[in-house]
Image (cartoon, rainbow, N blue to C red):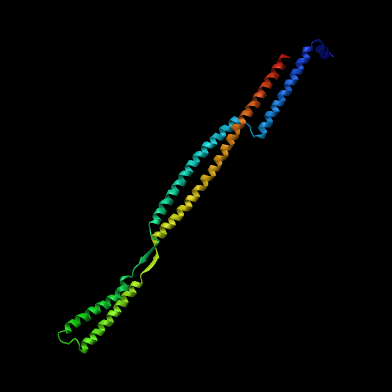
Length: 231
């Protein structure tokens, strides 16, 4: 009854209580709106979150530069080996060895002996004699054999893979694999950087609404405290 009497005696008190209750409700509404906004946008402390993301971005960017350097190094090695590979024949032609020509050389040596013998016999025998005929037949036969041996040796020349080319190609393929392997961490870091940038952009986009809600809470809180203290 004392409270009711006080209210009837001082109508302003009723108005003050109503204002205070209204301010308290507005403060609760503003706080609920801020809490809901932070929950929906996963905001704990916007300033700290932005600072953390900026530090993360710097770290990722530094790691990308290191990874990109490794990629460039691998690609340069790959390109250098490719240029070297293009300048070297993939196959080489081997010629007959000295041993393969040995039989032909022997035949030529015998021919030289027969020709020398024929020259010596020229002073003692007629060109039409049987001795000359047999000697000429031997020379003709041996000449044919020498030509055959020479042709056979030449035909043994062959084409085979160039070992230098094969070794460089192996190094080139290894360099290609290294370049491909080096790109993977760079690409992964690039994806991480994109994700961090997107998170920063979203927080920056949310900052305006977040600041407005914080200001609303602060204003309602100041209003409520002012009324509570006054009355």
